[in-house]
Structure formats: structure tokens, C-alpha cells
Length: 305
Ligand SMILES: Cc1ncc(COP(=O)(O)O)c(C=O)c1O
Picture 1 (cartoon, helix red, strand yellow):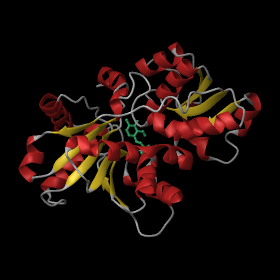
Picture 2 (cartoon, rainbow, N blue to C red):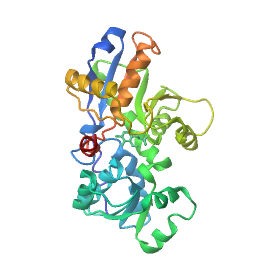
Picture 3 (cartoon, rainbow, N blue to C red):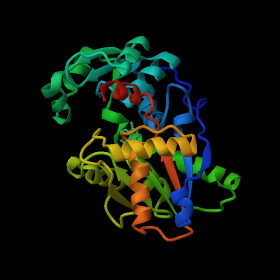
């Protein structure tokens, strides 16, 4: 699958985030706008896919098979990349056929879909899950849910270089840490690898604490002195929203002009506000907040709630 992997390295803007609660606490935040790298292949998704696509290329595959839900940002970016760069994509979906804006896009981008039901989808972690799919589609390379694992993390390591290159533009010579939403923890693990202990990485958990995120991160970065910290940000469960969160998102969008979505970036920023109010960070702290994208998923969300 001849890919322009070295030709297309999307660059994300790094902008100061001006919000009254940051100013009041004397804390500076710069936001890395991964939501702006591309109209379709947006957010952290492309970075998590890069190394998987390299591996597929090396294996001589002509496409990718992967998994996700009916609002999946990962499948959306994968299908868009397949369409743009001319490789085949096959999505294994959780649950039973349903029409969401995301599913419609997947079909429009030419992704072939198989619905696994709920039990079938739960089996994705079992050994041998991929065997029948690989037998049926031997030319497709399997990529784990969300583009995770070590390959997913390695693709995110370059985010540190992008930020370092742009610091001078903000008038900063350094920063004190990263703050970002975690689903599988893959993006955070990539930053921990890239930082090699130089700066801490703070993860706002968009999923409940029993989802094994810490375990998945350890599997990628290894044990030893933890160079990261996780904070509960899920507000009662993945994809659960409440009026405080929705009001916070609306106010923040109005004040900053930056679009947020409620599942990841909205929850992550609200958790940061709460930690700052609890004086977790001293005055003068400079943080890099990653906007991990996901705005396409908002469409299905607003029609559901
Ligand atoms: C918009 C968005 N932000 C953050 C994440 C979390 O990234 P990770 O799974 O690498 O922790 C995801 C997906 O899981 C996502 O879709």
C-alpha cells in the first residue's frame, strides 16, 4: 500500500489559551490543536495510525482491518485516510447495524463494515479473535481498537517535537507538563516515551478507573518511576454528560472560540480546572493541553441527547 507516510506529517498549531480561571490562578496553558491538522483525519488519530500503517506497508498488505463503535473517531480517521491515500479499509463494529453520522461517513469513505453484535465485540481481546478475519481477508493488516499498543504510542512521540519547535512562538522557553484526555492511554504513553522523564504527563481519564488504562500504559512504557499521573475525569462513566459539563463547554467555547466535545476534551479541560482550583499546580506553572480532536463524534451525540 504505497503511502505518503513521510510526505504527510501534519503540523498542529500551538496557541495560548486565555480563560479567566487560568488567569486567576496565574497558570498558563498552551493548547496543541490536533483538531486542526486536517478536516477529516483529525486529532490524535493520525499519529496513532502512522506506525500501524508503516507495519502494514512492510507486511505488503493492501489495507487495514480495525474495530470501533458507531461513533468511533478512530474508524472515522482510518476510513478517511484509506479514501485519501487509496488503501482498503474494513471496520468491525460494536453492536447491531445503526445509522449514525459517523457510520454514514464510513460508508461514504468506502469502508466495508461488519457488525459484530455486543457479545461478538466483547470477544476482541480473546486470543484467536483475529484468526477468522485474517483467513477471510489475508491482505488486510489488523490494527487494535483505537489504534492502540506500542505502535500507536510510538506514532505520538513526534507530538513532543512539534511542541518544542513552537514554544518560542509563544515566548516560552520550556513547559512544566502535559495535560490530555485518556481513553486507552496510548497517546499519553507516547508522550511519556518521548519525554523520557523530562516533563510529567497528566492524563484525564475519560473512562472509569476499572478500565485498565494504567495497566495498558505500563505495558507500553514499562514499570519503574512513573513519569505520569492519572486523574478521574469521566464524571460517572464514559460518554456520560451532566449539566455542569455542558455549561462549562458552552462557556469555554464562547470565551476561547475553540470547539470542544463532551467525551474527551471537554471532560479533560474541566478536570484541569478542578485540579487548578484544588491548587494542584503552583502559580507560574506552564502546561501544554492537547486538543485530541473528536469533533466529528459530536454530531451523533447532539442528535442523541
Ligand atoms: C477525541 C479523542 N480524544 C482522546 C482519545 C483518547 O486517546 P487514547 O486512546 O490514546 O488515550 C480518543 C480515543 O480514544 C479520542 O477519540
